[in-house]
Picture 1 (cartoon, rainbow, N blue to C red):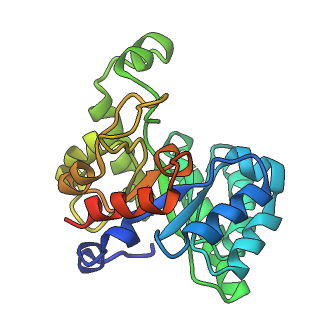
Picture 2: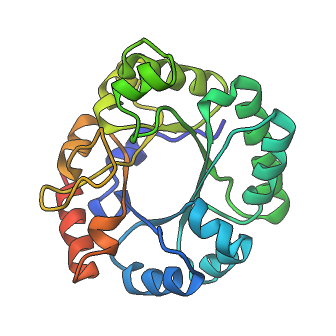
Picture 3: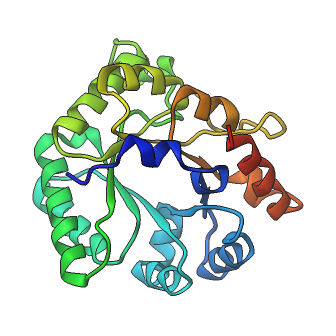
Length: 249
């Protein structure tokens, strides 16, 4: 497993912790955002909407711009298929990518192995593999009524995090509200990326389990993902700077 030292995490500054979600429909929009914000943030998240439109060509263009990428593909399939997809992503030189923890230990292990082999062959750094725990759009009510899982959200998240680490993942994607229980069960030598981050001056939109940037870092997260509070701001650079300052705690 690609180890991430505790010292490295504690040395991250606010800018390095900030991942901006490129939740836009076209490559033109995405590259425009990257050009505008690349000096203010540490990484850019490419999700399914944008990837479905642009494909791997976008990842190649971002690599040319030397823009670190978190590929948020959330792979969840049989192990062979997840490994094949991970191999393709691994050779693109992304800094992070993710799979669903619900895919199980074999899927996580094979995905990581494939991504590492592909990165080595392409002579690019091995990507950090994250496992998605419970989506931040899922409340306790949705978890229980829609998905039939009666355990508390934080317990489900912790269980998936333990599974992820035991299966060789480098970290997880989880709400900041579940970070304390993850740290309690696993410790600090494990990357936690937190979506659903909203500064106090922004709307909640469709996220249910959210916290502010400052609170997220105080709880023990390493990286935060922020989208609309930056990408829809009147002054995007200023919004990014304000959030990076909040993360510098």
